Length: 96
Image 1 (cartoon, rainbow, N blue to C red):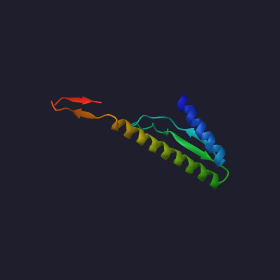
Image 2 (tube, one colour):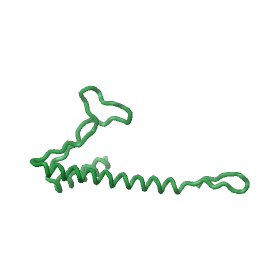
Image 3 (cartoon, one colour):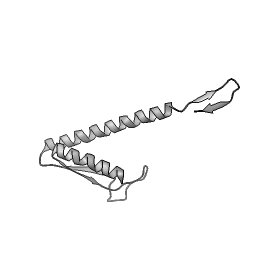
């Protein structure tokens, strides 16, 4: 529920900035599962009275996605780097 609120808040800010309407449409399907005939996976519908508003909304959505992906990569690299295996002189290993 918290994730939904955060996403909805971000979409509302993009709507205000771009003057476009953004709605979440479709149905969630887990990875490697295809939708049934006539159904679609989740997507964002962008509507506006002019092309500039649509382009502004698309650009901002893409920017936020890239920013979040970079944050996730950094977090993954940090958490992976913090776990290491040390082998002492006796040949036994300890994971930290």
